[in-house]
Length: 373
Image 1 (tube, rainbow, N blue to C red):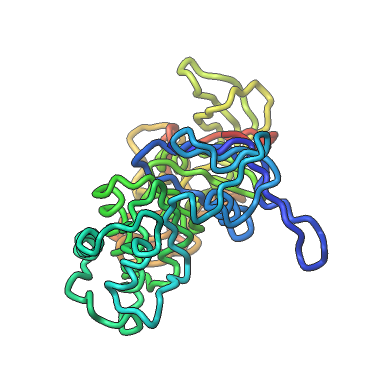
Image 2: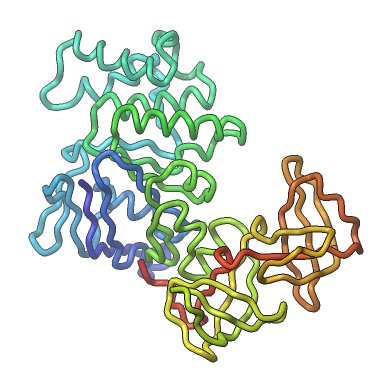
């Protein structure tokens, strides 16, 4: 449905220097799916979204929706933003303060070419207001809404125009933590109910994992990995992705050689020899970094009956987080972060036994450039 190919967007900064905001960005979003651009501030994700919206003019590349080019450097095509029929919700909701809730949601329909009838407008607007739970507030002044209600109104306004594409730029970032979590479910429900093809921009990893069908992780203007939320989390292609998307332990390793199972290797580390997995082909003596999520570092007070990747260490610190306990466990010179059930009550200075599932120990070559998709 949406196709972005070879997109480069650059602009001058205040000092006249060229900012290379988006560099060779390419991805596709199937109809009815939610695709997230995830990355730290300044990585180019918002510039990419604004390029799709037509609010930035790229240097080169191609953007098509339903096989219709809205931007093509080779064919000299640039469709104005108001002619693309895209809905957009910004970090600031841009609610019209002089209008009530109904008028805000109806505004895009009233000013569009081929304006629907008054009855059609009312039917469309009340349907989306009901979907976001604001139908009872249709006549309320928009300025009298809470932050969460304003966020839902901004979504309703974007959905009411039945956009070809919905573009969301950090739409939940101004909400408090509990409301943000609630709105994730609401947003996912609305996206599914209206079958909206959506591009979502965020720096919040948990938000991206919770909402997306696919995620593109960006760094320094480039996409470094595209995959499903599970792929991104469980099979990071480089240390940047492993570190940015959730917490990880990183352990230097040297490859001893491949095992019989495809993608399985034995490596030597400061923790001893480990069995690991890699999506890249490794050879004996290659240098690698092993990424292990804290929840995949299994702890026990008794020696395990068996199992691979076993060692033991001393508890250096512990933090109670309610639903879990975080432990720092020192194994020789290596400090591991482990996440365990709160029933684990090992004291600081106590000994714990560690096992790590080889499927969860991901080997990343040190030579990995971080520019693969």
